[in-house]
Amino acid sequence: MYPIKRNRRLRTNEAIRSLVRETIISPNDFLVPLFVVEGKGVKEEIASMPNYYRFSLDLLENEVKALWILGLKSVLLFVKVPDNLKDNKGTEALNPNGLMQRAIKTVKNVCPEMLVMTDVALDPYSSFGHDGIIENGKIVNDDTVEVLAEMSLSHAEAGANFVAPSDMMDGRILAIRETLEDEGFVDTGIMSYSAKYASAFYGPFRDALDSAPADVKDIPKDKKTYQMDYSNRFEALRETEMDIDEGADIVMVKPGLCYLDIVREIKNEVDVPVAVYQVSGEYSMLKAAAEKGWLDHDAVMMEQITAIKRAGADVIASYFAKDVVKLIS
Ligand code: PBG
Image 1 (cartoon, helix red, strand yellow):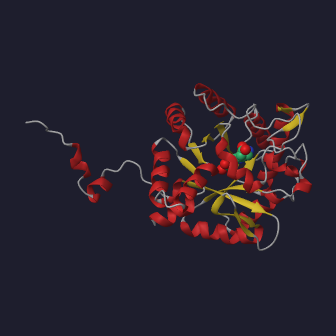
Image 2 (cartoon, helix red, strand yellow):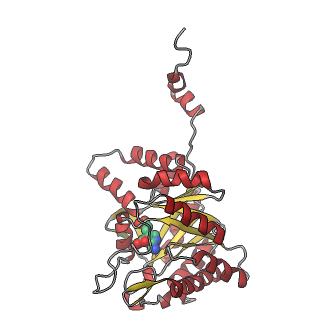
Image 3 (cartoon, protein in one colour):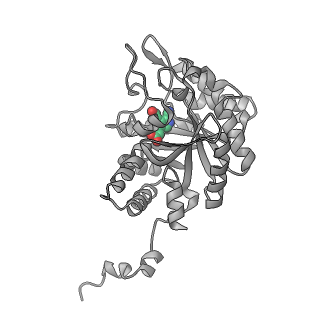
């Protein structure tokens, strides 16, 4: 009587396959990163990120409306700061009329229901391209955390729903939470980049914002003193648990594909939503391979996004969000 079980029965045709499918991608899964620049009428393609753009505020309005119509209801804002406004302390980050603060208001104005998350880190504002303040050739933790808390407050005041600290300083979640509570922003959430690895996959993003660590004598050329060593696994759990204790509402693993083991492990351990950031280098790799005709863009994109969700992602930050939603709708 062997075999009583034939696993292929559940794969016989698309109807049965879709009936028993475990992981379904929907627009609700996505958080859409958006790059914002000064100017008017600017929609410039990022050289190392084909079909991804920086928008000035006027064109950001159209983009946000288009996302909403597609069913994409959450955005993550990043700004490209003019060089003359950058300094070691990221002073411009606290400007109540800075580009980020105006971008938040622009999105909320054109689409009040859109969930607005903001990047909190000093690198776009830092003359050295680092996520923290530099003293004597080192990225100092506690002084940086103070600025990050003020920056978060400034984003909350401008109308951000969530702040997303991507800097990897110690103790910043608690400092941000306390500052928000003290100032009455009890409903402003924190999505912590809790397990963020020092990754070479961030290259295209740093092109997009012109935010790569500067090649200056006696200044670290990489972010390895604050972002995590990609050889480590237990450390990711430690970082994540601490951020939850400090008040993170959502935790994140970043990058995505190379770190799906970490995603699954964290998803099994914690009871808050887990976000995964499929980063710029992951996007650009596929775009490049598809341009060469070496990979089927849409098929590989769906396989990757599905793998990220299957690994345990409740939220996926991805530059493919629009492409995916257009494909599946
Ligand atoms: C900055 C920040 C980075 C990314 C998100 N926030 C770059 C970095 O840490 O150097 C990377 C995103 C991407 O590559 O898509 N704190």
